[in-house]
Image (cartoon, rainbow, N blue to C red; front, top):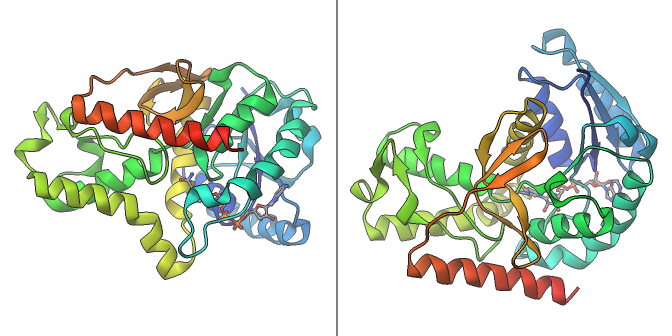
Length: 301
Ligand code: NAD
């Protein structure tokens, strides 16, 4: 099986994905990069190729064009504007929705048969627009969703209670944005509820820290990219390896006609199945609020 990936938008996020990929064992054989700034991209490709002598993996890396999408297994989109200090992800909606129309049409017009993986913010809206513009089955379009927020949550809990983030079964759900929330009633370590380890006060503080993580990073270094690069590698490997792993990606919600994050089974078909989480009353209100935030943003486009 020969696996080709196309990355559209090779700024900090796109390149963090590429660099993380080169540092791991992966199913990817070929990496094709597209960006409007081709001069910088040439430099990035030279730099990436110089990793290969010491990389655990052999990947062909090149500067490409949309015709490369024809036989690509995954097209990752990380093109577009980034949050400035004080800006929310939703503030990017107009800038980024414009560029997505042409990007997605260029991909599908080249007979793309693979899966779209979206990282650009506002994430759930950009993933929805990809679905609309591509006119492909919804399972073949997914966004990174709250995979990054979930990684942040697990790290913060692990620091607090001294258990590896890999062994914490807790998720951030809803919008990848300010209305996201943590369904604590379903958060566990092994088979034990996290409520045995955390007070209500702890939970409130953790939820706030997770929600503010991006703002805090942006305040200090301008933007966030290593974490999302790693999430993109995890999702890419889940798809190419047909892994059936559960990740909190942004997936299509048929009932509401939007994209939103829930834990979902990810494999070579994209999103195989969403996991329906039993919420308590408070969590039901929170997911409803998140759905409304996304719906309103789509209606105002
Ligand atoms: P960046 O400015 O470093 O890179 C964006 C790149 O897109 C640039 O290289 C630019 O030349 C390219 N680009 C712009 N228009 C293009 C087009 N039409 N075709 C091809 N390339 C084009 O920004 P970044 O830090 O890499 O962030 C990219 C996006 O990812 C932003 O929207 C950001 O908010 C988002 N992001 C998402 C998450 C997440 O959890 N999903 C995390 C961090 C950042």
